Every structure is written in structure tokens, then in C-alpha cells.
Image 1 (cartoon, rainbow, N blue to C red):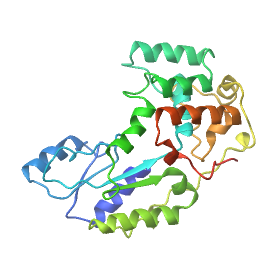
Image 2: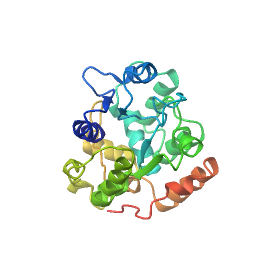
Image 3: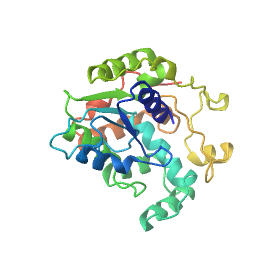
Image 4: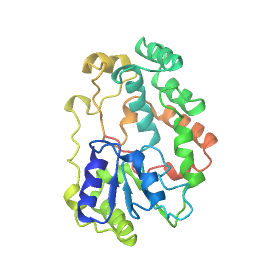
Length: 258
């Protein structure tokens, strides 16, 4: 995982900062709050996290700085569609999530319909809907202490992305000379996907052998346009705008068409 590799590199440069992470071996992220409260540590790195709340958000005497990275929500929704329908293991799922998996895997729920459902009510795949997760940014973020990064810039222009991150980290007292060395590998599109549009997602599932534990994750920006036509994209953005008045912040100037 890129974020974990990046966190470890930054931690190695800053020995007076303790790294807390669910990816550590053994995981130690649950200890961060207690260590900050007790004074066992005064400088803590916490990464990666899937939620926008940090371990020190409830502490009066802790200054919390956050780096938030977002991906185009439609790319996230399309990826979640295939995860929900096929690739993620379904143990300990709710009845609603299992019913949704059955509808997706039997071809009864289109990509557009799933996206609409997740935006409107949540699909049951995660603990909260995409709208709730992204909406927490506008409700809780503090521009003076939070940096908002975009996944698309990381992929398409890592030099600028890393410079923005480096300036922010340096400003809070962290050394980060290793950022450029951490650049993720260049994403290559599977030749079989180039120029393809799948009106029927079942065609994609069949052709690429999507099943439990196997999903071709296309990290190239704009992947949703392989499964949603222009009208559907505009329709879903209108729906996002209704549910999230600040969603204009999430629009990307580069739609990632390939």
C-alpha cells in the first residue's frame, strides 16, 4: 500500500515522531490516543486511515494536522460496485449487503443504479455511505491545518503532488526528503481495456474473470467512463451536487479519458 510505504519513509526520517498504523506489525493504531493522553509521546504520525477523523481530534491539548486524499467519487463508486458484487469476501456482512451482492452478481443491478443507490442511501457495503464519508471533509476540515490532495494529481503529476505534501509536512516540523523516492510505479492500462466501453458490466466480469478475491483494479483516472456514458456521468454528478452542496470541490479538470 502506497500510503503505508510513504508513512514508513517519513517516519524513518523523523525518529522523534512515533508512527501509529493499522498496517504496522503488530498493528498499534489503537495505542495512539492513550499515548498522547498520557504524554508517552508528543509527536505522532498516524497513517494510513480510511476515515477523516484523527486519533487526536478529541484532545484539547493536541494540535492535529491532517493530510486528506480524495479520488474522483465516480471512480470510487465503480470500483466499489465490482468489490461489492464479486471480489471482496462476504464474511460478517449484513443482510442488506448480502442481498445487494446477489442483485449485482446476477446482473439485476446496473452500475448506474448502484451508484445512485450508494449516493442516496448507502449500499451497506461499508459502515457509511460515500456521501457521508466525503461530506465529513467539508464539515470537519480546517484549511489552516488540513491539506487536501487529489489522487488524480498523484498519478498524473507526482512532482507537483509531492511538492505540495512536502511543503505541508515541512511546515509542521517534519523532514520529508524521501518523498520523490516514494513515487508509485507508473500505471499501465491493460491493452484489452483501451478504448473499451462496457454497457453491460457482466461482459466485463466474464471476459476478465472477475470473482471473489480477483478484480482488475484500474487506478488510472476516469475509469468510471468505461461503465457510465456521458449522460449517466452528468446525472450522477447532479445527484452528488444535491446531496453535497460542496461537491464542486470534488470535480476534476482532467476527466482521465483513455
